Length: 215
Image 1: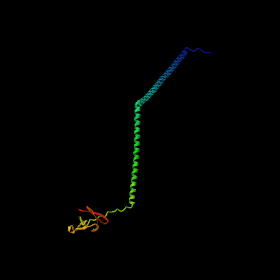
Image 2 (image 1 turned 135 degrees about the vertical axis):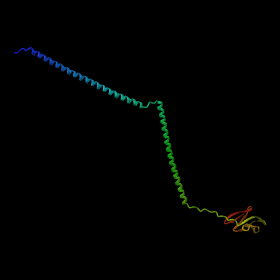
Image 3 (image 1 turned 90 degrees about the horizontal axis):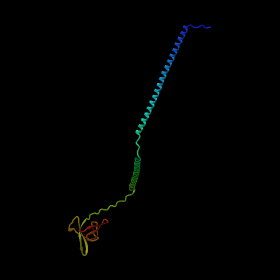
């Protein structure tokens, strides 16, 4: 059997229930406010992170574009077909000149080597010639005997009795008083008269024939 509650108890209970409900609402409101603030900060952080990522990506893109621009600046300018043909022709001519220079240099070296060989052969031939000349017995050089001066002087040619005589005089006493007549076959001081010519007397002396002019 239940007893009816008094009016004061019902009011007190209702008051406490109101207070509890108000506290509960206050708590729920606080939790909701806290969650709202947290969500707002999280959204701000997320948005900030997204902006940072975008800024970083844009920075990387700008750096890449700057590198490409720098590369394009350093890249040589394109040349035309005519310029390429001229450069190729100049290069071919230069290569031809270099090949000619190399061939000329090789030819000069070959000529120098040949000249050195020729000089060596000439030197060897000269040495062999000198050795052969030194080894070959030398033939005695025939010295021409010195012809002595006649010990007389010819005065002239005289004709006596149809016979010609050579008139001479001694060089020691060149006077007409010491004159002597020589016929062919006569001798004077080792000089034998072989013949009398119109302008000279032919003598034989030391195995040689000598002519003495007639004045």
